[in-house]
Amino acid sequence: MRRPTLIALLALLALGSGTAQASADKVTLSAKTTTCTTGADDASRAAAFTGAMPAATQTKRMQMRFVLIQRLGVGPKGTFKKIAVPGWGGWEKSDPRRQAFVFTKRVEALTAPAGYRAVITFRWLDAKGHVQRTTVRTTPICEQPDPRPDLVLDGAAATSVSKTTAAYDVSIGNEGHGDAPPFAVTITVDGTVSDPVTLGPIPAGGRVTGLLAAPKCTPGSTITITLDVANTVAESVEGDDAVQRPCPLA
Image 1 (cartoon, rainbow, N blue to C red):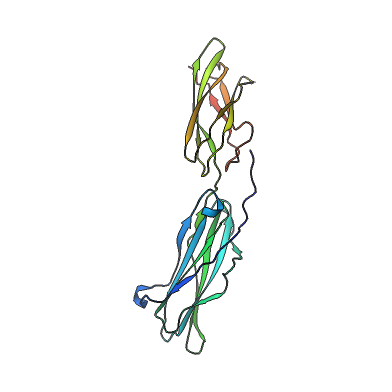
Image 2: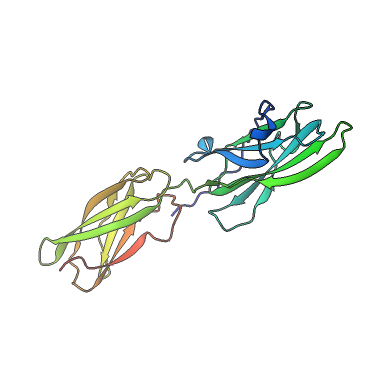
């Protein structure tokens, strides 16, 4: 099957909005993933991370610094690494003498499959600009699943047509996150491969059925059903398209 190169992390946007209107007793120190949207195309994949901090005694100004980290592939394996994002990395500052500081940063056009977190550094400054305290929190992960389709064989039945041939009824599903274009299916019985039959397209989460004419299998033997014979579908899982099943004839 075709396996395309993963989309690069492109067009990352950093959109910040700070507020200091909440009172300190309603704001606790936190680092949260406030938005995590997924989709089949990069334009639909985004995440927003929010830091919140209350003022300490004699704090004049509060600051936050956001760093985006990325883990490529399907979690939980893999190592998170820092990703450079325009508009990230600098210190975001509250207005002076505020009781609390909340700030959100957003990234778009995320690569998939991957996981994303923000590492937020919090800093409290006194009236002379001296650092009173510094602490770091990491947000929960925004998981971006593989956007490609994944063809799976749901079932196979057969009806005898003659002494030598049978009609095989196959059900094929798409368990991936993207739509699957039309694809060809064959059945191999005792080394003889049937003519291919084109099925699909299948939307994500959908299923199709089809009939294939092939030699009659012997009860107790094994047949092989091959999905996407011509390798036209780029799938998230590529190694499960040749499926062996017991002969469905009684």
